[in-house]
Image 1 (cartoon, rainbow, N blue to C red):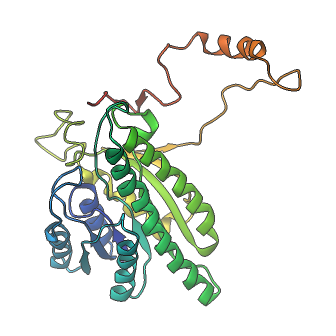
Image 2 (image 1 turned 90 degrees about the vertical axis):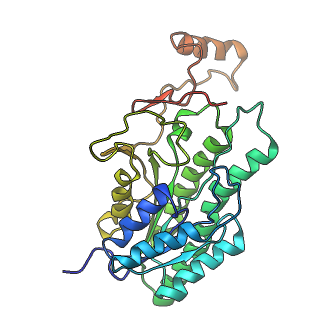
Length: 315
């Protein structure tokens, strides 16, 4: 019996460690050939000299189990290097079928302490990195579809965060980038559906190098699989990349520790109409003050807690 992803080619960015590594191994297990992308910088803030080591190690791990894999050490936030990543997949495996965007860095500060460079670097790696690979992958699928006159097989799985849902006071750059990724995903899903491509986004919770401070001491298992292990996230990525998920498109899912939650679109909680040509201040006050009067004074549009996880202020 053939494997679900046999004959498919996948790219996983940021796949040298943590979530990306688990996702690359998960895609290889049911038969996908994998391009393991990782820039290889040792610091979770993107600092340090780039190294081919992490990507090569994961690619070799896949090959040792009988799979097909190749390493790519380019920077996905660089437009030309992202193009080279897609071209490597096509040149090596004949085409591209699956793109998993996972690469990212952290540079946490409160908004009043954050430098321009700390803002730009996180937006660049997360949001621009997701756009760059999506741009070239979508062009590949569109061209293939136009050449055959039929839909192709394409899957995009992007990585957002509960920091986007909950606000995360000490991560304005990261929360903004992750919110942007959700918008990019839903736009991409609408644009590529006619070509046979789906695009979905996950908010994973996992104990990795990037989240070492956030999840320090929280429920780590000593006698089994850690509830926050990346291996709990990877199966959902594999499923969304599979033929079984053909009807899932433009969706946001939270995943961790053996749990998957589907997040619906925001809903309107109240609506007011002016009785005049335009609202006056007094009229707005009549409607809005009572509406918010019963709410806690610091409650924002963002959730203060998402599925039991409280986001602490970072410094």
